[in-house]
Image 1 (cartoon, one colour):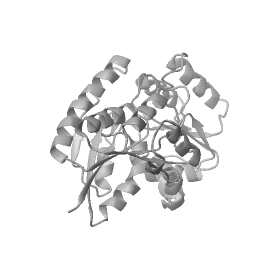
Image 2: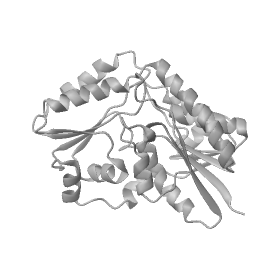
Image 3: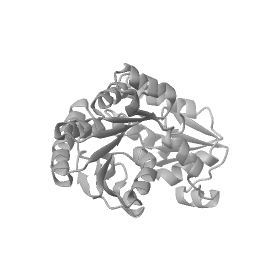
Length: 300
């Protein structure tokens, strides 16, 4: 009998990390892979990246609507979206009945999915526990998921020890190394010509790759944070700049509006791309001169 393993994914960055694991699980004769797709993947505002998952040859077993693109980006709207995700996940788990649920990281949609799985008594495999995020509520969410999970796969030995210090059984906490590092080593990069044609901009050591997410616990207003970043970019007028959208966090739309206005007045050197996808993002990392902002995607 095959073991049913369900991977939950809600963002482009997370799927970029999980896709290799999904492909490996799908290749096994003893595993039935299930994909639960939610949040940003289903949003037109963020590029409807579920299409990229399907284009990669995967079957999406269930879509759980979460974001309403007509909503604002307030805390209340975020909580309402979480409630939609919780209800949809209950229906999805009832139908799929997985033996294991795999979640990665520290985002609020994964908190709702993990909470539902806990009530269903479905064992949770949590990837990337024990890490630290400053200035965001990600830390609290990550640690909450840790306490709900049965198996913990950490990126470093330090992170493994931190999970054990939280009271988890050492034999259930495994230092696997960082998926992002594995992907950077093993994912074939696009040729520079192919990448440049895809993005519509020269990408070389004079290019800055920029992502800025809301720092959700920072008392400084998001518009001031983002303005400081954009002012800093203007100090490098000879550099091309590729800016990707932030995640769907509270006040994320403020950042989207600001970077779109910024790029509109600097079209000769600034390009905004809602989602690069794993292959284009890792390729851009390969050719660009620097990563700018507060994304952890290029750093472990």
